[in-house]
Length: 193
Length: 425
Image (cartoon, rainbow over all chains, first blue to last red; front, side, top):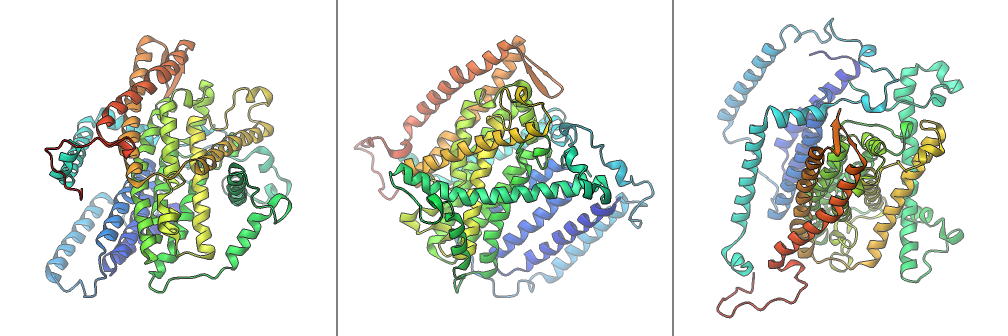
């Protein structure tokens, strides 16, 4: 991990916000507060995607999760009108949960050590490019000043990964058909026929 | 890190006092964007203030009244008076409201509306603040964020009217967002990019406005845009006669005005995107003959062209509001799910087919991620769009929706006698 200057500041900002708000989300007593804190975590994650030049993923993350999924979450929470949780939620399953999270943390650390060999304890590696080298020359016309991230994603999706892409869309279609089937009653269908 | 900001004009980077003391890099990528952002915010917020006056004047004109004419000449200082009044009002927070969320939700709505302004291509070259790779996606994502402000505001007020308004607006905005996104895809096939400045440049290169290729897409986008911004005839979330004021019933003073500014800023953004994607953005045929492209005058003229087009669409918003009655809720949902979304999907399929057909016929050449048309190509695409796509979608959807009691406006057919129908359904 090479972190230089502003990039490092933003990375730690987003990372700390994501983790902290995730903790707040779990401990919040009110379901709507939890949803709002989850949104903050998701937005911070989108910021992390931006830092690795994955603009498309960041945009889709906000569009799908915040604009779609979380809005529906809040919608459902409001409709069923969840009452505030008064009891302490952390008394049940303490041992099992603790053991699970311990092993999860071990796994994450193991993977980090594996992938970040050598770089893990040095923040700025000597081979990191200087900021001046990264910045593009100011004479380039605007259309070439930006990354071609979206085009790459599109080309990959429709050439190398067509099959998984199609399978995913088919699964979503099945889910939609199932939802419509569950929502529609026999009586309603009779009326429409 | 990539730098998304466009470079400053030469006269700015050579300003006598600043350029001696500040590094040119900082000048281009920090000072200039800040100047742009400041100017943009000033212009947009003033414009929004005067849009409220314009709305009142236009509504008065449509209803053969005079409208506000007491404060200043012809009522021109009315927005100022309104602003001061809103600032001086008592700031009420209902006793049983969820205070944090009640306070934060107008801020969410306002910020979501203003952030989207950053990527809109206001003019050629340095007239634009930033040109990011995912421009259009960014706008859609940020504007979907704005829904949250409305829902949370309605919920936090702890009032039944507010909650009902919030629920309505959530369902409405989620439904129309789908149609809105799908309507834009047809135009994306011609521009081949999501970056908004590049979309305008591609229309300039083809010397045409996308609306000629995409009449259906433009219409769907416009209708969904009106619904997205909760404007009449789709203003059910704040229907006065049913819900007092919908999601902002409990808001007063400055917090209310934040919601109000957000609504008008959203209208501005929807119009600006429609102009960028379908109406050529700042491109006007013949503009480059009047001024040398890239000169200061050209950039200023391009900003003017963009502003005029956007204001024309904003006028359409006002016109619609004071001409059409409000839809009923089931009609609103049927319009989205049974008309807009299928029409947008059909538009995508037909547009793609005609593009491929044009390439097979040799009328269209695609190279380096941009299209090139021969004169036959223009004729082919425009004529197929108007002669085949529009009537075909109209006929097919009319046929499909004939069986469902669309809009419930036609005389309801009496059901066959031998079937018993539960009246509760």
